[in-house]
Length: 506
Image 1 (tube, rainbow, N blue to C red):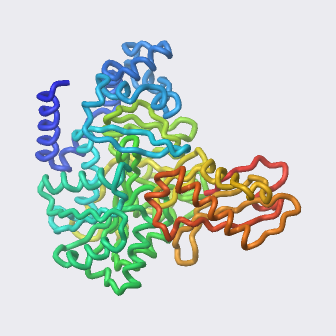
Image 2: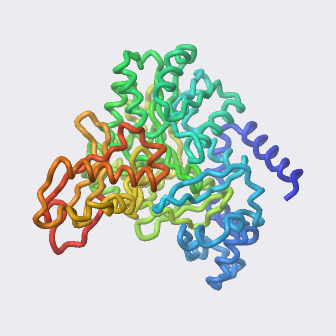
């Protein structure tokens, strides 16, 4: 690609973004047939991305034969194993040109070896629309001056730089947003809020949920009067409970959690796939109070993340309880399996279901906050996410894998004390702070001791820091040490004999 056409791509994309109001854009998307958009993406990728062309050829698929949504839904899904890891990075990009992208993010996999995700400026603008939806619909940031404080880790990880860029694009579009980037440096975050916050109508903290709670709690301990800053939170990377949201809302002085919080469903693979809206939060809060309704709707007794999405930007499908999505990006993805379990519910089906349980979210006092109550109510479909099905746990936005812990139990003299079985969990203490819990099975005849516990915890920590760059960079040092408990061989709760062992628990 020559630099002239690259320049044109950027000018066209930015011009469209700046000149198209959010309402117009989302309305256009509601009126565009999803089928034609996703088929157009497929044919473009099949023609212009060398890796996908090769993938289809290997499967004996002629792209010209894919003419209907049904044809599309019979295509093989792609994933890291069968697609991303198998082809050179450049071949995964359009025209086999890595230089057509201008930014690369990294996500660390189960081995700690990073996967690289290139993107171009124009790809970020699609994601900026998700931020615009939150800033406009939830925070009224078109009329209220905002200080956006980026509390995601800065570096090659996707959260910090991507979020910073998106907030700046909104400022270019005319939103009165000013950005500061302390990253996950708590002292700098608190200094920025205290020295700058009162010069704005609201302060928006963007980061991982447990880290933002830690910032709020540390601020309270230091005498910060959060309510005077009109705090809003944008979060990603974790499922949290509505009890957690209520507790944090109370501590930061929030009057209406439906409009003061928004969680993103985001990934390094493709940016933001969906976002919480005042409507989705209102619905989730109802479901948290009515576990029977939640179990009926989601089929599980745990509450997933619930967001709305734009099907033209990211097209979701469900296959065997696992989410697949298709979307354009530096590496365009067609029927990509990110290993998240979950499901999709149309807007009408959601309202119909809630009506059967005697609830109308559109009349809820938390949504109808004023005469502009239509803000935040958009007829977009819902996607719910339970998280990774491949036995990871998410902690401060870092994916932690059982393999990382195993290595910690393999350092001398620990193998003499343990069987190698353990259960990895993220738990909450009484104050709703998260900690990493590892229950380890002792070898037969071995007695538990404080020394053994400490040695095991230190060994696991050293291996997590060595193997998992997300853990090392996302998790604040004071939350990194795992809390180890030692259980006897065959403990009925954690290590029942004769049952296939699971290394993680949600």
